[in-house]
Length: 497
Image (tube, rainbow, N blue to C red; front, side):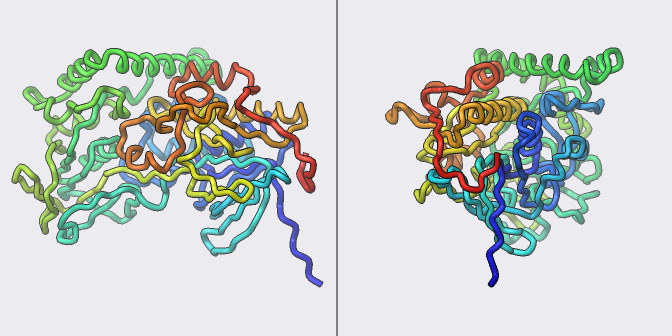
């Protein structure tokens, strides 16, 4: 007689082995070394975004002293670094702390169902390389996959697209064999991806045009943090890193607050900086003067002003206009101008996908994300033993993720101390006013706002985007809260310590 194999149980299942998942694994094994865990990664390599995107010039738009982990110094002289250096840093971190041994590749989570009777999640996993499906259980599910789809980017409908004779490429799926040397390239878009691509392509392309419908704020920043590099030489890496990190946290926070409190002054200052970096007489107000306030959407950082340098040298230009149709030779604009192109790049954004598209149920009832409210920016109302990591939209992503992981581990410690095996956020006031989880003007967020959880109008239901506030909420304050309900389950057969 053949007996079915026992279902594997883990204390914590981390979904995603990118910057958030590796960070979550570090804090978990540091604070709870007795707990079993694994990271499920749908792709065949660690690194998440930094392994997925391969377009020319891809880099961070946050400094790596804050985008890097608090526990792992950034040792490179480049403060604004390319994907290859970031990927090496992530993989070195995973190897140094033994996290890579816990990663299971080509494994995507299809669904997770919670049983209150057993205080566990039953998780259906599919192998992306073979299609084989397996089931495992876990006490906690930690979603660390970010908030956008890895399998496709966003491309709006373009009239006449099929007429264009050359390749049309989305940066999320950059072909390894695409040769743009000596060619005319039109990059459609004005966000972080576009301002990264344009100067990188301009190094070898015949000419690059950044075609935008609406301008973005673009601010030059030093690629190297000279103070950081001097401090490293004087104090050594271990002592210099936290000093530089704190300095950059304060600096970033002050800039954001200045932009929020004095938008007109911030706009004027950014315009003045742009004017200093662009050719004399350049139409700054046409191409670099957005209709919204600074930091209503994310500022685009350009290291050492590389975008402006390409414009000054004549290898790149910015055109602000509306597309009427693609043509055989390029793009026809509303102004009547036709931009001729050999290659068109649609740097038009991302498609949002919360929690990796996992189908969630709690005691047989489907979890409808838009009907949930985020608790402390890391759990969902009515959903037990599920945490997630979504970083800042106005600062370095990892600053928030680190604090969330610390708080998560403190919740686990509290549960161990008191013998709890489940906790569930519950709204004390179901009539509390709500607003979008990410109160952010970016197009990819606006397109998906109805698919995401909400946030409330008071703590602990606010999703803070302020580091100092979160230090108080997630690091200093108690995990005990009237709206976080802990419980014990009578039957816990097979659950590890």
